[in-house]
Length: 318
Image (cartoon, rainbow, N blue to C red; front, side, top):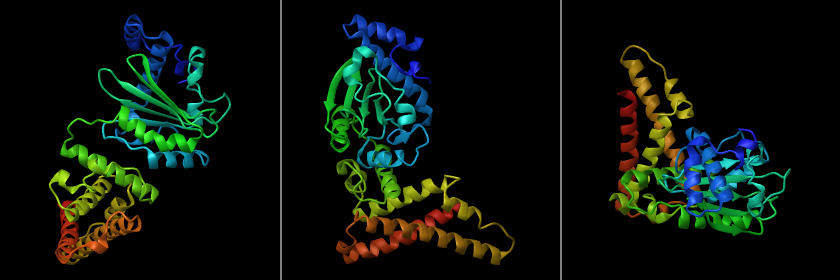
């Protein structure tokens, strides 16, 4: 997409009827066209996105990566929200029309970093955030049905990021009744960020995480701990590019009982190591109070640790 196609000057035909409807309902024409242009852009990126995760849609360079990681640590999404991180290579081309100059936020030629988050539905709501430290006023706009619902201005990047999750939870979060799968995806998405950042400070709404609130899935804290580990390793085993998957594939094949026993032992060792590494990360990030386990919980811990290794090994051998 070139710069012109990313402004409100050009809206795809599929959106033009909606824009006319919004204008007929009294919406500001420039705002209505700008929301439609943002929706067009999100439509282009949607195949690259995984709802519930902030996804960069352009390769990040050394200057971009710290900004993305800071945003990833603080931005907390319910599992149905697609979110886009735009580094300067793309963000500098996303320019509001002159009539919406007050929401431009950053001067031409400066390194712009934008985030777009959508709440899908018949009346889609879109959050647009400029988080660059070079912005004149970092901040957020929220659009729905061709109208500007709200705008938030901040003095600097840190203040903007600090408040961004609060804004997301108020305006975008899905607070309808969640399913077990919703809790599962939300918790796994959170923990994958912990793995990427190796930080226990990753933002999470504990009341929606089965790891923090095991009663959501009718479990206790030991069950929840190992369910999370099981979910993470199962996901890795379905990723052909994951190092664990590649290591298991490299075990190879052979004939005879001795070869089968050796392969089984190697598989168990690899899976046991994967479980150990996740437990170590959880301890390093101070996410679980291991020192408060009762004797009963310690016995349960040992049983569950062995059980999930057997379960995973059985999956790989079936």
